[in-house]
Image (tube, rainbow, N blue to C red; front, side, top):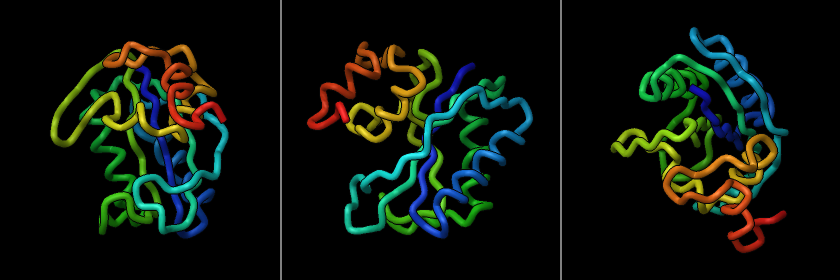
Length: 155
């Protein structure tokens, strides 16, 4: 399965946090990182009264099921000091599964594609560096079309 992950950080040297998370993801059994977007400084989403975030998208191949991959990613977040004190609050590291090919999963603990992906220009723009023509399996639009449909999205 090919997965696309979004990594983000706005605390404690964010670029280093993202690099550390990439190293830990690459060390997971059954996971191979194929490509990555550039690391980009972005405005916070949801809760705007905090430091800007650094974000990056990773493309990886894995034989892990989505739920198993999620658990591994949450373990990495926890090992890196992630504290879930408030929704959309500051964090040392955040790792979200954005896409898993054409898979659609809708559970309390896991939504693929990411439930808010279509509203997040920062995530879509990084995805477009890697897979602009990938089709969103719910909205049936490409990542580029979703990005272009957002106000100011084509930046």
